[in-house]
Image (cartoon, one colour):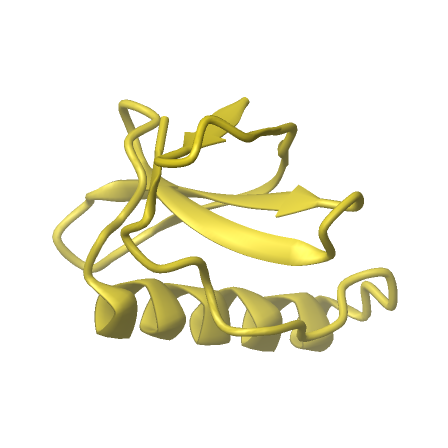
Amino acid sequence: MIETNEGERMEFEVVGIVEDEEHHGYSICYSEAVDEFVVTDAKGTLVEDDALAQEILDDFFELAEQSGNGEVTEASEPSSGETTS
């Protein structure tokens, strides 16, 4: 669950886990209700650096495409830092 600064709660499901070259783990989370992806760190905290989050999402979509998983489609850019976990 992610709660916005306005108090709205949104449910996200982890759809992927990726690791960067420095072995930092990230979760790719998707909410069907709002059709949005977000990226969290290994502790479940939202990645607030939009450029980093987008890079992680881009890598995730590329890996999903290479694996032939047709279920993942690119959506809007990740949420900005306006939400908290």
